[in-house]
Image 1 (tube, rainbow, N blue to C red):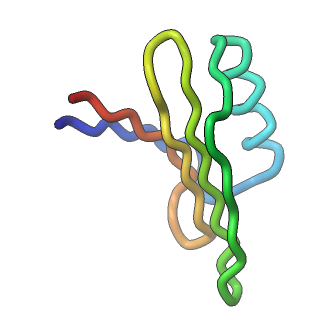
Image 2 (cartoon, rainbow, N blue to C red; image 1 turned 90 degrees about the vertical axis):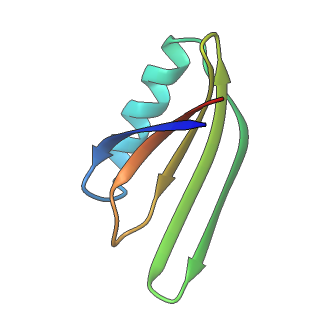
Length: 73
């Protein structure tokens, strides 16, 4: 299994998130799963989207990068 990661931003940002969602929608990707949780001061977001090229995971945490992950089997 190979995992590719692309950093979208230094941390979660509403503007970056909206642009990413629009770009994925334009590429015919649709949300399959979405959740977020507030744990102390950590606002964690997670999405799984599917499209013509497969499935992508999008994760963001305040202390880590806002990133896309693609898994190849």
